[in-house]
Image 1: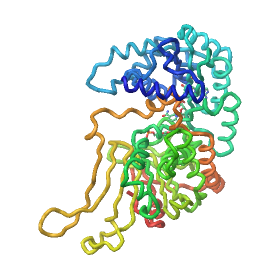
Image 2 (image 1 turned 30 degrees about the vertical axis):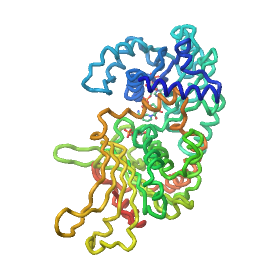
Image 3 (image 1 turned 90 degrees about the vertical axis):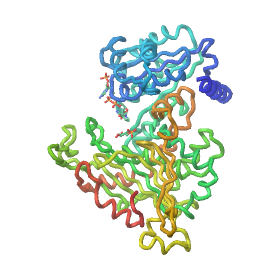
Length: 514
Ligand code: NDP
Ligand code: BG6
C-alpha cells in the first residue's frame, strides 16, 4: 500500500510540474476525487466499473477523500444503488478473506443521482450533490461514460458545462468504445468532444491495454536482451493475434449487429496489441513517446485487401440435447443479417523491420474455446544439423513464443531438446512462465489498472486521437468494401473452430494457425 501511494505521489508530482494539475499530495490537506459513473444502471457499470473501484479501494489506491456517484435516468435511491452494486463486489484480492467490512465502508462512499443525459439542470443538481460530499475541498472530477455512444456528446456537454471541477481541480472523462464505426464518424465524434474537452481530458479506453500480459509485452521485449535482437523480419516468420470466445453475442446482439467482429475486436483490441508488439523502441516510457511509436507503426501498415479477409457467422448447432442458437436467432438481429461474428485477416507493416512478415489476426464468437493469444513463429534454423532427426516434422520444429493473455495467463517458448537417454531422439518442450504457478496473488482486472491510471493522469494505456485516426484509416476502406459488396460470411457451427477459409488464408502466407 505504501508503495502504491508513493507511486501515486511520483505521478502526480510530475503532473504538477508538467500541467499544473492538482495532485493527491494535497489530498490529505484538502483535495478530493469524485468519480461519476454515467450509465450506472447498465451492464458494464455493474459488471466491471464498480467492482474495479472497490478493488482499488480495497488495495488502498483511492485517495483518502473520494466519492463515487452513479448517474442514470433510472430512478434509484442511494440504498438501492448500494444494494445493486453489492451483488457484484467480490473479495477478489484474496478469495478466502472476508472483506465485508471493507465492502460496507466502500458502499457508504457510493451515492446515486438520477437525471437525463442531455439536461444541464440535472447535471447542475449532480454538481450540487458532489459539492456537498466534497465538503469544500479542491475537487478533481472523473466522469466514466458507460452509456451508448449516441448519447456521449450530450453527456459530455452537460458534464463539462454544469458539473466540471472547481477550485483548480481537474476534470477527466473516460470514454468507452465504440469510438465511431469508421474514419468519418470517429473524426466527427472527436471534433464534438473537443468542443467541450481538451485531448488531455479525454481517456479513450481499450480495456485490452489494461490486461496484465499486454502491459508485460513491452517489459518482455525491452528489458530482456534475448528478445529484442530477434524482433524483426530477420528471425520472425509470422505473428498471430488470436481472440476467441466460446459464447455468442448473447444479450448484445443489437449493438453487435451494427458493428461486427472487425470493429468490435480487430480494429481496437487486436490492432492495439499489434502496435505495441511491432513499434520501434520508444524514447522513454512517457505516454507521448509510446503513443508516438504506436502511431508510426499503424501509419506504416499496408491497406488491407479484401482477398486477405475471411468472414464468418455462426449458425445453430445441436450437441446432445442442447441446441446452440445461430447468430440470427437473436431477436435483436435481423434474420438476413450478414454481420460477421468471425473474421481472419492478413496484415502487413511496410517498414524496414517488418517488411514481408504476415501479421495474421483471427477473432470470433461462438467458437470451441475462449482465449486471447499472441503467437510468434520464428524462422527455420539455417543449415539445421538435426534436420534428419526431425524428418518430415522439420516444419513443426521452428521455435514459437506464445503470450497467452487469457485465460490462465502464461508466456512460453517452444524449444527443441533431446529426450534423455542413450539415443538421439528430439522432442518439443516449453520453457514456461505460468502465472498461476509463479505468482500467488490474483491478477488485477484490466479496468482496475485503467481507472487508477485515469485518476493518476497516466495516459500511456489510453488511445490518443491520432492513433484512433490511424486505426480507422487502416480498416475503413475494407469495411466499406465488405458492406458495399454485401459479402456473405461463411457459416460455421456454434462451438466449432470457425470457417475453413481461415486455414486457406493462413496457407496462402505459409502459416499454420497456433
Ligand atoms: P447499456 O446498454 O447497459 O447502457 C448503459 C445505461 O445507459 C443503461 O443502463 C441506460 O440507463 C442507459 N441507456 C441505454 N440505452 C439508452 C438510450 N438509448 N438512450 C439513453 N440512455 C440509454 O450499456 P453497457 O453498460 O453494456 O455499456 C456501456 C458502454 O460501454 C457502451 O458504450 C458499450 O458499447 C461499452 N462497452 C460495454 C461492454 C460490456 O461488456 N457491456 C464492453 C465494452 C464496451 P438508464 O436507462 O437508467 O438511463
Ligand atoms: C469487448 C467486446 O470490447 O470485449 C465484446 O465488445 C467482448 O464483444 C469483450 O466480449 C471481451 O473482453 P474480455 O476482457 O472478456 O476478453
